[in-house]
Image (cartoon, rainbow, N blue to C red; front, side):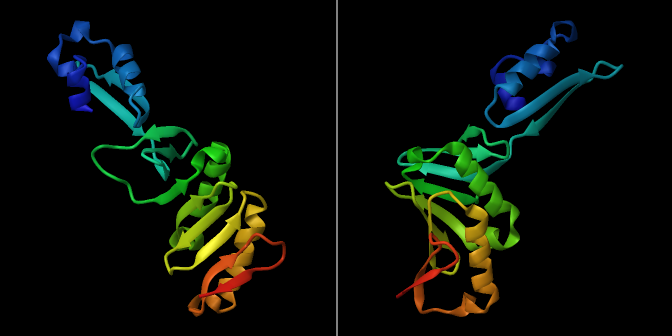
Length: 185
């Protein structure tokens, strides 16, 4: 934050108190892609305080060479040049899927402890169907972003019944109603 304000000649320490525009500082910070909100104020001694709330990315979307994060509010934010956050990754034909649907699906996954631990990547094919990659190596042929709750309930039931240790399947197809089709290695 300090460097950002200095780069934009708005750091409170570098200008006279009478010339400090809290509104300009807040506006500048609010336009930073990683900042959700900013509040600038001073105390009775003239000390300036800057309080910011960072945007929290929940999913990384990689579309060819282009990429971005979706934050907790479903808004796009640019990738950082400084670090790569470890989180759910979405790849493939991302433009074929509605971003709101992607946000909805990602939220379901990250808010569910079981799914969050299992699903590490979602790949979207040319038919807008999803292939999910898991920690244990099985692929989940999810289909389109429809009946999401039912599909995840089937998957959980499958694992609860003791099938999580089964190593003979390379993929589980969740596309069909009331069934899981297991595909052998």
